[in-house]
Image (cartoon, rainbow, N blue to C red; front, side, top):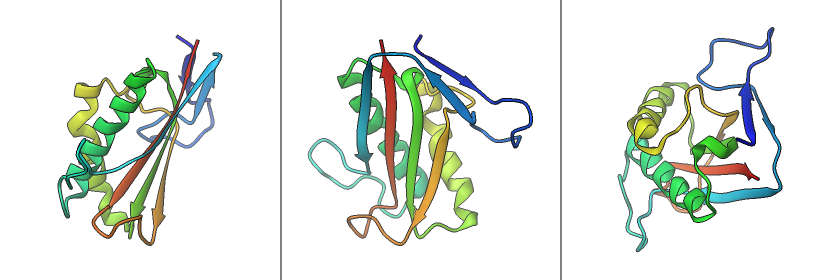
Amino acid sequence: MPVHLTTPDGMFQPVPYHHVSIATGTRHVHVAGQINRDDIATVVAPGDLAGQLAHALRNTSRGLAGAGATFLDVVRLRFFVAKWQPEMMEPFMDGLHRVTEELGIPQPLPPLSVIGVDYLFEPDVMVEVEAYAILD
């Protein structure tokens, strides 16, 4: 496997993700921001952060699969969350846990960032997911 996830001694713990990914590979996969839309652009889980995140991760999985990758090949995840508040962490994590087993998302997670933004490209979009993977 071209991706090794680790948390070196002395780095902040506990967190549900690794702080570092080390990748050796020649093919880089970048999955654009995925949101709460199905394959015909129908809105999924309006007003439900957990439901939107679960669906966005399913879309991310489809994007990875289209390049021959899985979440095991991911070196970094980036989440953008509209109107982020600390109390949103519980539904955020719920959405992630809903699909962890289904999508084969490793635990702890790859390195990630959760970035709060004022808004995303449409008013109903609460979360967007980007993924970066390495393949040999």
